[in-house]
Image (cartoon, rainbow, N blue to C red; front, side, top):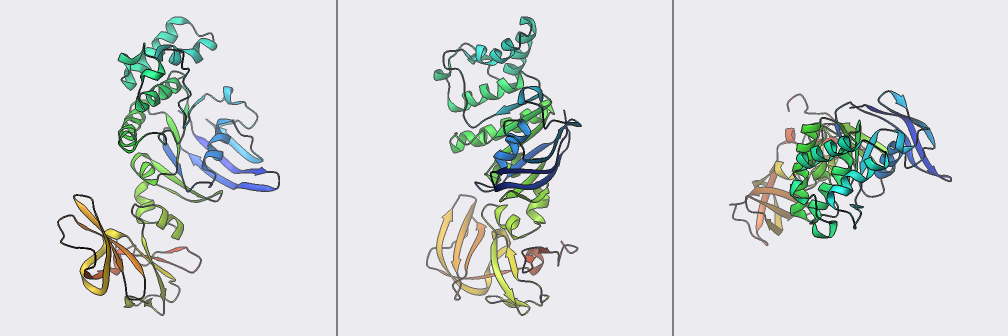
Length: 345
């Protein structure tokens, strides 16, 4: 296991800077997820840690050692990519062993590592198959196995589940979480899918346009977002956002808010149907145990509420909606969160 520390790390392509002085500490044995919208710089950051991309400025340390000048092969890490990149003419066994053979590792040690990786990933029955005989999930397990056999101090994952269908992604999320629990090795995982981030991470780093917006546990990011960007990015479905002025909002009236509150955020599960302001139901999404109700208020404000799946609500219905002020989130004009009711929460 190894910690990873980034100090004022920057990346520029010519005069265009894409990573803007990032400071980040990944603790030894931690599962850190880098999440953010496409183009925010998360994969670039991961590739710089891996040594696959040169940094323009700053320092990167792995296990207490500055690695700026070390090539990727000497950083004692393994990386799993979006593409499986398996050798099509080789069996699973040979795919797992190939990198170790190139390092001229003794055969008995190669066999030990390959056998252990197969046991951990439960792919023993696949060892003599070729990649074309494997499903997408099986190929991804083999790709992860190639990383495991190196027994690195650090694992890096660059959106490894993006090529899988929805059901396989859920299954592989569980398997990766179990793998982390078994190995206990430091892992840094890149994804644009905040559901993946919330379900797997010890801590999450939220990136936006080459800057870190917030680092925290899934609980902290969901319940105490630092700003409007984090508040609306973390959470599925998204947080509702209402403009505020004069101590309240246009749709819900006076709320006794301080003058510096510019926006009020309310998560769909905190909207209450059956009392309050009148709106019109424009869409109902039925998901079995719950429904998502899309509403339009007289002002044109769009809201999304979450309700029990047994609720009898139909498109075109009139509906009353309200929320508890203590369950909402409040933001200033610059987007920074204002902790009005944190003590009460």
